[in-house]
Image (cartoon, rainbow over all chains, first blue to last red; front, side):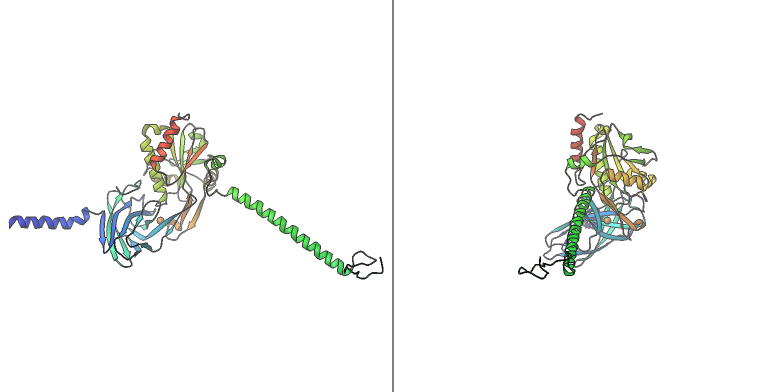
Amino acid sequence: MKYSSIFSMVVTIFILTGPSLAQEQARLGDLVIERPWARASIGTSRPAAAYLTIRNEGEESDTLLAVRTPLSGKAEVHAMTNDSGVMRMGPAGPVEIPAGGEVSLAPGGLHIMMMKLQAPLVKGKSIEVTLKFERAGEITITAPIYGPGATRPE
Amino acid sequence: MSTGGIDANGQVDRDGPPESEPMRRSLSRLRTVRHILWGVILLAGVGLGGFELWHRTRPDPNPTAQEMASSIVANFTLSTHTGATASDATYRGRWLLVFFGFTHCPDVCPTGLATIAQVMDELGPEGEAVQPLFISIDPERDTPEAMAEFVSAFHPRIVGLTGATEAVAAAAKNFRVYYERVEDASSPNGYTMEHTTSIYLIDPEGRFVKPYSYSATSEDIADSLRRKLKGKGQI
Ligand SMILES: [Cu+2]
């Protein structure tokens, strides 16, 4: 009796702390959000970027419609296009996550652009990012903040 | 030569002034046509020449290293992030890794500078002969102080360079770097920049050697640099 209550307590603690320990993956319906991370901002006047991978394990495609974070006045998914060595950046618009496929937001490609920062993104802390999908709905994930020179999830 | 009229071939055949009124009119029409034709040829020539010129001054979409080497002049006179004046001559004797960008760049410039920082870490003591330079193409926002704040976040060896609008434009032109201001309401100060993202390698004599693609890994660049350093150019 005593042991089983301790056991259930441990299990409960594990379940409660589990999501924050295992931030590299979060699930929303058929969607799995993996390895989210953000780059530390250098001051607050400069925009910051966050990255993650979205995997669709379902049989129907879904679409990432919008993103938001509490630290930025405005957040948007941006795409980089390489025009013979000249990089141009602009809003990506709705991003389709094909059935059985995945979309990676990674440096030099798609990124969550955080503009009008209200506070700097500090290395070692984390930032909440809310993703809104057409079918699956909304999910808020926690992205660890790495140094300004990070190029991939650690 | 009769008194005039039209012969069997329908040709005007007549005495007196060689050009009758209708003939003068048709001849002048011919002359007009000829002028127009010459005009078209001239315009085509000017157009082709202009295109050729534009083609030559515009950055080549896929220039070979040789084509670039013959046109890139690694000349600049700018201000370092500590406020000192620096020109290409300041760095003679060292291999330069030159990257153009701006500090309000959220994705490409941090990634490029991170790659360069990793290259310097990988080279270790060998990297003494290599000087990484980050040249701003956004002098309006990139004061030496802003450059200092930015480059120091990546690697202590990176020198940030900025300057007056004209000085920056001259440096970019010499390196054949394209950049353009793009209005964007959500960006700080209402604009962002588009720019060439290659990393340029300059030898210790100040000559352009090759560009590394923005997507090159730090391992690739470090390996390439090690080969160069082991060659003749090591100082
Ligand atoms: Cu962006």
